[in-house]
Length: 601
Image (cartoon, rainbow, N blue to C red):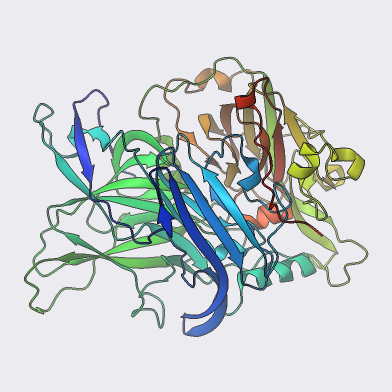
């Protein structure tokens, strides 16, 4: 059962001082700029008793953590010493006026070829908290990913959180030292025998579903519930009586995940690098791509028990498909100055971690997210969109002899938004085509993505009519005027089964103003919107068989990808692009392209 203790908002605030320490130091740094070198290269690693070669950054898995402060600029030199085309995306960074360095392959850039290099310039603005970076080519982000830690700017030397985190006496003031765990917690997935990119190629060739991963991971390790995994298990050491900031990232390709720590409550204070009203829980649920910042009090005093499992378990909303039914573990380890080798009890397991299929637990957690302060939600909407998300079947192409599809009838798995199954360009990128005004004359994209599905029906009724005959492949984009307020209602459909979808928008954070189960009703549902303190996120978990409404002001000119963060759905076509036009002043126009943009040819 979900247990949440809401912290009152109207309380005295205390000053929290961070104990900063860089796990990975930049090559050089100044007050505002941080420079990193990323070398893409293969290394051999062993997991689940099997050794295989993976792509890494600087030989690390997960990759290095980037540290910066709010408003800083991060410069990353990427050297592709691997054997695949690569791009890097800075997930959750708005990149104001700066789509050139956003990263999605053939959307804002051509890939960095093996032997090539590219310098990314990552411009931070309002983000503060935990974000992450990852490859945006194929399934490469399975091993090419790492954390971005954005600390308060130098003019704000500490974070402010409600005093009731620490003491019920709201009038008592005290400085509390808030420390960080040794590393951010990155949840991921692992395939034992095959590289994730090979699994994608197999799915492309056959038209069948992607093989489920064999294990979830915490910081690259499945944990000691799996064979051959005890030695490498991730450990985070804490000292009794101290308070810690725990940063958690779901980097999984196809899994939403529950996360909890045995014997400890967790206080949620931020999601997607935006502060939330704090509330205390036994577990959190992170959709693929989401991040959360948590406060943990190391207050256990259980005699000979000093080890507590941190656990990550799949949340699967559609059991009609294959899924990874596993739980990854790491260890929270209490330490003292006097450790004399006494016999300790085995780690405790988080008893309240929800089951794999516990939709109620996921829904209850998500419903508690609120912005810390009253939000500046635009009241007037200029562009309304109802976007249906569908997994369906489309015919295999004549030149695909190995394509049989999941049922052997030469119908391959596909997905779509408003019956458009997105096709990535290959000979040019959309941003370059738009900027140089080559667009439709070069056949790169069409500016006619529909605002509504072409056919209305009971979207969430079991066994609805097939939409395949009404679905077309194409590279369709939505063009928006600068400054327009856009509302997008994401609507799940039941064509091949209902499922929650993590929808991610590049270049923006949006207010999640509403959500519900069933079909969205424009005449009734907006009356229940939260326009006071909705959460500000870059990735929204759309409920299974339901809808979620998001709202944002299009004040960031450029070309911005929007897609499901389940990578197989994105590959199948559950994507589109927003092109936001320039404003009328220099500071409302896109920056010029850098001179070293990779070439497609």
